[in-house]
Image 1 (spheres, helix red, strand yellow):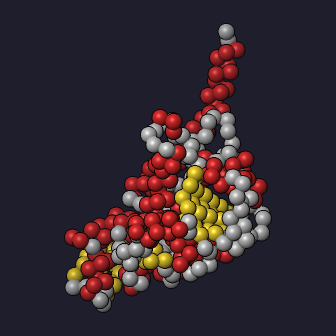
Image 2 (image 1 turned 30 degrees about the vertical axis):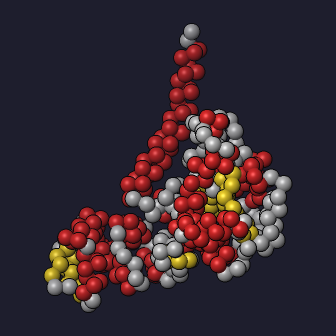
Image 3 (image 1 turned 135 degrees about the vertical axis):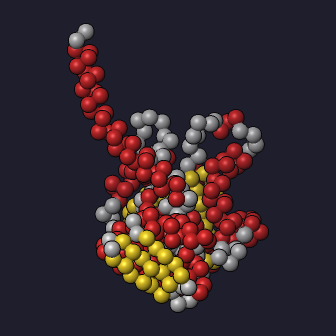
Length: 337
């Protein structure tokens, strides 16, 4: 049995690191198969040498996060653990240096919480067009809206334009009450939510009335050229190739475009190709256009969301492996009749 002792010098760090009723300590013990004893700001880690070493690296990573003002929760603890297990603990220092993108209406700083998110934010800063693909909960839309608000506040752009295709996911727009704007508003709700969070409802309404902020379905984009604008196309996996080309060619001078989508959640009619998937293939080698892929490690919602995404990925992989065999068996069965 090998053991190492860590002295946690600051009491607030010890409280944050150990968690309520040593909750965080239990997570570390389970993750690294070690035994941890905590006494008077001292942490004794015992187990197999490699496991103890990895656990120490994770604790140091968590202390660095606490030092930078972060509050530890299940999500960032799991993320640090996964980085250590993948041998990428040296990249955690980069995360600690993550700068604030913008301040929300309630005074909370918005920061990238994973390396993938950090690469995404940097890509938006460095390129005119960014295509971001990733599952739900990876912050694709939220971080893009934060960047848009920051650019707007800094007067880098005069307008924010948010749009998404109003694909009818099992419901008919015609049956919804109200005029066209009221009918499409439910589809645009996540975009409104992100803007309310960043600007506050009052400021949002003021900017919307002035025309500085526009939230509209994709069909409204046709025939326009958008200069001095930060334009976000959300749920882009539900665009057709024609819609995607129409949208990307709206780009005007001094503008930025961020396109986000989850290619595992395509609601288009069967046989229709996703405009997002085609755009990634067509544009991946074009200068000033970046393609960023986020995965389940970048999920910053409830940790169960990561498990759900992983389970579906495994299920889809199994299904794609079994499909040719099933077709082969079906073919043989038909041959006997």
